[in-house]
Each structure stands twice: as structure tokens, then as C-alpha cells.
Amino acid sequence: MTRPQWCCRVGALLAGLALLLILPNAALRAEPPSLTAPPAAAATIKPRIDPSKLLVGPRNATTAPSVLTDPTGFILFKQQQYYRAMSLAIRDIKRTAPWLASFSLIGLSFGYGVFHAAGPGHGKAVVSAWLVGNGERLRRGVAIAFLSALIQAITAVALVSVLVWMLGAASGVTREVARYLEATSYLLIAGMGFWLAWQALASRLLSRSLAPALAPAGHAHHHHHPHHHDHALCGHEHGAHDHDCGHNHLPPAASLDGDWSLRRALSIALAVGIRPCTGALLVLLFSSAAGLYWAGVVSTFVMALGTALTVSAIAAIAVGSRRLALKLAKSDAAWLGTIAVTLKAGAGMLLMLVGLTLFWGTLHGGVSVG
Amino acid sequence: MIGRLSFASAMALLATVPQAGAHPHVFIEMTSDVVFNDAGLINAINVEWVFDPDYSAMATEDLDVNKDGMLTTDELEPLAKENIDNLKEWSYFVYGRLNGEKMKWADVTDYGQLMGDDGRLRMHFVVPFLKPVDPRTSEFIYRIYDPTFYIAIDFVGKEPVEALGNKPQSCRIEVRPVPDPNSTEDTKAMLATKGKDWTPDQEDDFGIMFAQPVAVVCKKGAAG
Image (tube, rainbow over the protein chains, first blue to last red):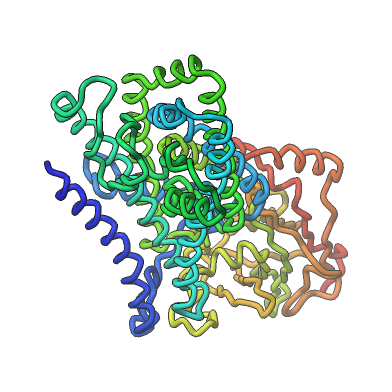
């Protein structure tokens, strides 16, 4: 498979996601319909009552259809059960423990920020960029790391906020909007899960088949990644790095030499940080789906702080101790890559399942989380 | 990397499922009527429930079929019907004893729901007796409660139970206190630690200890 095809596929996927966002929105403008309830004309059709609404329904719940005689019914039943439990959990979090949930999210995000920047594939790129560094470069580099992390966070928040605002402005009926937003964010979550899994597996397969031909050990240019970016900034001396979202937290050392102005610093930081991190988008979507929008915003900035701290620490180590830096770089071993790919693929599939189940629930008139 | 977070958050989400909430989960404020026929015999119990705002909001979501922002009795009917149908198995939560014997009811056919201006859902239903009961010659007591205490149902107001119809002069309605308030509080504390999926053993009749008995007491020998 050649690069253009990859790019097209990703483009199509993103376009598809965008369409999913825009289509229900456009439909809403034309005539306020509903994803869940029948339109007014069909008033005779009784809505199906969700089991969770019943006073005694949940406890003497109907038994599941047999998996042998009615496999479809069985799957639907199980799916409904699962969805109900999950949406009730989100509803309960919102009602009973929004602070606990918010702080967990924020803590998780900080940890993610710290470890994501230190993860396999990442250390090497950063360290190699800074091996020839000096004290002045380090100072500038740390400033750039914080600045670009901040810009990344702002981009992510702006993107999701515009999304929320767009959906909100489309209709005055807030409950309708909440429903679309919910359905859309579940779809996005599922789509992101699919993308993660697909990207992880595909990049693995491709690097197996192409890597030996293209690259001698330890100096692979992994150009198979679906989005090629920042090539002007990442010089080839950077060696192999996993081009995951938001991985260019540091510009190459060379670009920090010479004249130094706020304007120049900003432009470097912008180039690095303009693309929001998938992790941040994920947290924001999750949190707005769960009605914890502000916790998501705080989480995003805390995540950026964690990333900036780690990148700065790695850079400082690189300047301070060449040996330690080399050791860190060496730990970027193949088995770590395999673990990362497995984790990512598994998590992606799980996420896709969660997203699809929740989306399915909104379509079938389940308990709304919003 | 990204995978790690999504995995963690998905797991966190899944892990919260069993611990969600604690007993009870729905709160109902209740009034009731004892219905007498022309001969002064009891032939039905009226029940009027006012649900807590949370349940009201959750239960009525999606039910505004014509999207006019109003919940009519018609729109609430499917929910009421399903609740009543399911409650049948549970004696409609109305547990009566006639001279100490458990009573059975005829099917509820008169019921309805409406949404109050205060955002609280109301439900009323009439539990018809299989056979009219003469309170002057027999001892009649009833309680209204959820045996598993998933739902807390409490009487409200100064006179939560009234008589309708031709009540004999010699009879009055007594709403008695719960038998043992102290142990009731202890049990409530215990139940608060239980999750949503928890139910008492089949034999346990938890709800009864929170339920105020209603008795129809008549002066013996004094005819109506």
C-alpha cells in the first residue's frame, strides 16, 4: 500500500466523521426531529418504555432470550442491559459524585500527559534532538515545550467547544441538542477507537514489511504514518519516532539557535502545538458527554502541563548527562513498541465497543445521560 | 500512549457500574384513601403517589411525543400502564391483612399519571378488593411499601389516609407509627451501603419495617 492511499483513507474517515457531525445538525435545522421518539404525526405509536424507568421492572426483569433459539434477541437483550448499566452509572456520577469524577479525570489526564511524553518512540526523538544541546538551548527549549503544550491544549479545547457551540446554536431546544451531542460524541468515541486500533495494527504490519528495506537498524524513517507533518521541523537526524498525535513536543535543537524573539518563539511553538492531541480530544468528548465539560477543559490543560514537564525533564537530562540520555534512548526497544501497539489496538477496540454501545442506546430510546 | 488513557478511562467507566448509588433509589410521597361502599364495607384502596424530582425527570424523558413541552395524561399512559402491569406481581405494593391473613386484590384498572407544575410526576391507582370487607366484624390493616426498599414510600401530611364513601360512624382510620424506629434507622444505614443491584433475599421483607400500618378501627357492637 502506498502513502497516498493511506492519506486518502484517513481523509475519508475524517470526512465521514465530520459528515456525521454535520448531517444531524443540518436535519435539525430543517425540521426538529428526534433520534429517539417518533415524530408528532405518528402520535399513535407508543414510545417503548425503557426498563430503567420502571418501578419494579429492573428487579423481576424479563429473562434473556435463549442464545440458541433467538441469537439476535439475546444480543439485543445483553446490549440493552449493558447500555442501561453504563448510562445509569454516568447519570449517577453526575448526580452524586461530579467532583470525584472530575478530579479522577483531571488526575488521570495529568498522568497521561506525563507518561505519554515519556512513552516509547518518544524519548529517542527528544533525546537525539538534544544530545548536542547546551544550557541556553535548554532554557529556550523548555520555554517552547511549555508554550507548545499550552497551544495544543487551547487548540483541543477550541475545537471541541466550537463543536459543542455549533450543535447548541442549531436549535433552541436544549434537550434535543443534548441528545444529538450525546449521540455524536458517542459516534466520535467509537470512530476514534476504530482509528486507534486500525492505525496501531496497520503501522505494525507496514513497518514489518517495509522497515528492513528502507532502514538499517536504529535509523528508520517511518514515513508510512497516515499523517505526515512537520517535516520541515523534524530533521532526518531525529531517527525513528512513532508519529502519534502530538508527538512533536520539541522543535529540533537547530531551530533554537540564532536570534531569539518572542515572535520567533511563538511561531515555533505554534508549528509544534497547532495540532491537538487525540488524548485531549478524547478526554474533552468523554467529559462533555458525561456533562462534565469544565472538568474536561481543566483536564486538557493539566495534561499539557504534564507533557511539558516530562519533555523538559528529558531535555534537561539530555543536556546534563549524555550517558543517561543514551541509556534512555536505548530503552526504546522493539518489545516496548509491540506492547504499545497491542495496548493501543486493544484499547481502540474496547473504546469502539463502548462508543457504539452508547450510540446504539441513544438510538433505541434508552436512558439519556444528558 | 493514547491507548493507555482510553483503556484506563473505559475501564474506570466499566468499574463504576456495580457500585452505582445506594438504597433506596426512588422516593415517593404518598397519600391514600380507604373506599367504603354504600353498605359501609371497604371495597377498594386508593393510592396517590408523588415521585421525587429525579425519578420524575428520568422517567418522563422522551415521553413528550408531540414535542409541545407538555406531558399529557395520554403521553404518560404507556409508562403508567407498564408500571401498573409490573406492579401486579408485587401486589401493587399494597399489602393488606384481614384477621391476620394476607389478602389478594382484583386487577387494577383505574389508574393514571400526570405531571405536576413542580416537575414531580404523580400516579394514582385504585386497588379493588375481591370481596368487600366489613371493618366492624373483622380486623383490617394494610401497608404500602416496596419489600426490597428499592423505593422508599412515605406518608405525607397530617392526615395521609382519608375515608371515601359511606364510612360507618363507629369506625375511624388510624395511621400507626413504624413498630421500631431505632432498628429502622440501623437498617437504613446498612442499606445505604448497598449498591443498585443489591436485593434482599427472597424471604426478606425489608420494606415492611419502614411502612406505617393503616388500620380501620371500629367500636365493636356499635352498628353503623
